[in-house]
Length: 109
Image (cartoon, rainbow, N blue to C red; front, side, top):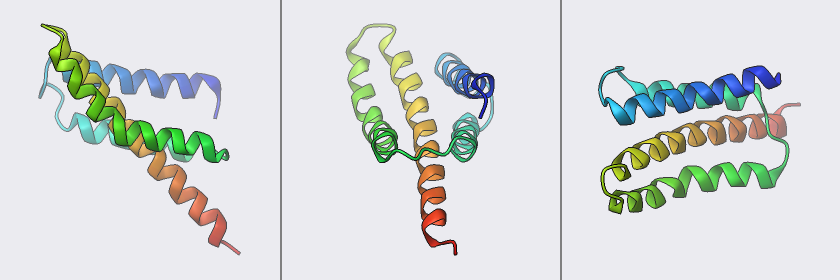
């Protein structure tokens, strides 16, 4: 995947996450769009390194819990929480795509 496409997809994920945090419900099915972009990113950019795949899994699994603690910050906390939650959804999509690709590569003849 080219550097421009990779950065563009990450920027789109972040833009959708910010839009969803600031104006929830303005863009319908934003979480699904973020997940699909994460899946596309994962399939277009397969990760060979098990450590990097594990890092994506950890972000997907734990970022939402850590983000909940951001609600303690007055005014900005809930926005940060929503943005990190959305990024965690995208990370989950990246991990699922890479896991599926890895399993396919192990099974294919």
